[in-house]
Image (cartoon, rainbow, N blue to C red; front, side, top):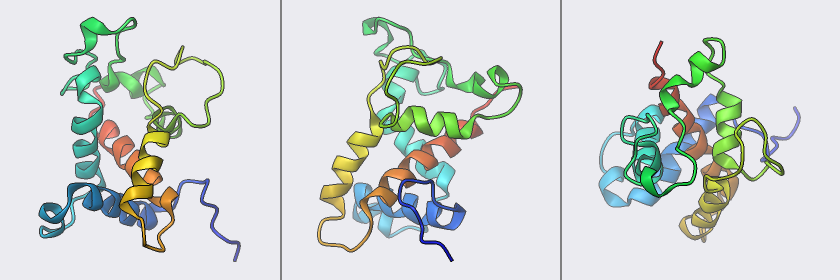
Length: 155
């Protein structure tokens, strides 16, 4: 059996464990005492904490920071519609992560923070003293966020 590569998205079971771990560490004891939330629920929490200020609570690109941005944030509820009715999960995860994007593409310039870098820095502190791979936390948060965005898609 080949060794798991930390640079590739983990499978569904690992993804759920990583997402729960990442957000449980970030949320502290309150989350740890309740039943583990679904990846979509974890993604909602992540979205509200880091994305809603620009994209809006309903993900339509109408957040309170919109007037201060050079380019309006994307309406995240229409991603599937704009991709032939299929949610572009890999693309969404790559755009959120941002660490692998070296030049602008169809998304345009990199106006959005490079969340992969931010999450990695946070995981270094959250997982300090544990044997857990830091990248699991990063990927878990990104994939939980993608799960949530998929749940918001409008026909």
